[in-house]
Image (cartoon, rainbow, N blue to C red):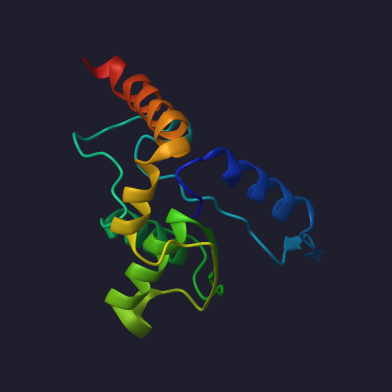
Amino acid sequence: LHSLDCSRAHAAKNSTAEGQSWIGGEPLVRPVVYNPRGAAGVPLQTPQLYCAAFTDDLRTAVRHIQKTFPGAPLLAMSFSLGSNLLLKMMGEDGDACGIDAAIVSAGPYDLVQASNHLHRGFYERIHSPILAFSLKRLVQPYL
């Protein structure tokens, strides 16, 4: 699971895929990248956008992976906002979450404080216009 900047997901997926090992023609690792609604070129199919508090999409993705590869261990890696989403789902579902192990990195501990920080000084002048441009580009085809 990646941060709000989805370009990191492609780098993680590629480096994981290149490093995988094979035994008898079967991969030991099958990298999967979770792209939330509207991220990384995924078209919107519902009126709901990505939200760091909405775990149902991730839960659906985990169930799909379990159904596609029954019995395979599911290990999750996440960064930044993706870490919040992953930990939130794991906390909500406990042992039933379907994740066997997780690595989380750089998840903001307090989303409200992190959001407030992004609306001050340097980040406000740089980050907010970039997010606004990205959101406009995302919804433009549907207007």
